[in-house]
Length: 357
Image 1 (tube, rainbow, N blue to C red):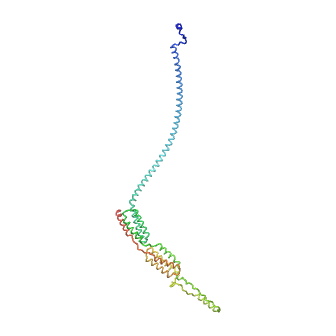
Image 2: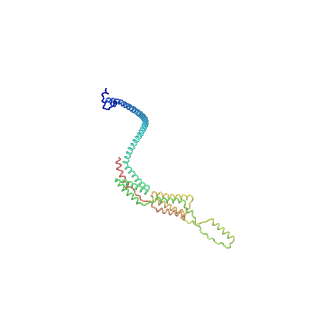
Image 3: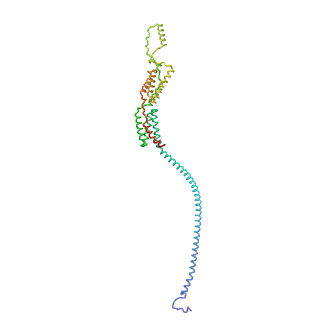
């Protein structure tokens, strides 16, 4: 009926004419397909996402397992290092204990040294004064007992140098007294004790080689040969030869030394020993500065030498000349005492003794 009522003049075919309902029906059939596609896409995406998540989870698990293994290895290394550190710490504690003990010992030694230094500082001046006093006393003994001017002068000069280095005003009086005594010792004439003693030793050594006067022989005169007679009987020649031989049996001649004493061999030995003793006595007198004994022993030795020994011998003449030269040597000198210096030391010692008491 509808076809009958459709106007013929529109020119539209029945298939071409689509109503809105048909269009809506067509649109409604496409939505399920689209929804299905979207669902499939979502499913595929979910499956892909699940696969990716699973792969990532596996990777994370493997990394976590690897990291756990590394951490366990590191924990083991850390434990070993902790053990080593603990051992080193115990060793360090032992060393620290030893060092602390040594430090305590060093501190104790330092305290002892400081106490000793303070004691030395307090007593240094006392010791210096005692040393100076001892040096002055030794110089005085050398001067008065041994008459050794050189040694005494050296000792006083050393004391003066030490006082100069100390440079303390309270020693000014002592320094002035020392200066006066040093000047007095320097003004004394020089006594060559060692040179004179050496010459006396040479003279003593030459005594055994000196010839005695009784052993001297006169110089033989040149015999004047008498001319033999041209013609001489045989009996006269025999008588003359016999007389010549007879004259040779006894021979008297001058020894050239007046008043030469004849000595037995043992007496000659004691003569030489007595001469040596005289020279030794002169040497002892030289060391003790005894001028009278020195001159007396040398004069006695020179007299014995000129009386009993051959004065024509060169050795005897040289020994006699040496003894005469030794007689002119100055032996005895007036030695000054060190009374000023000793008195200054005594005055310095009195306040110290009172302070110590």
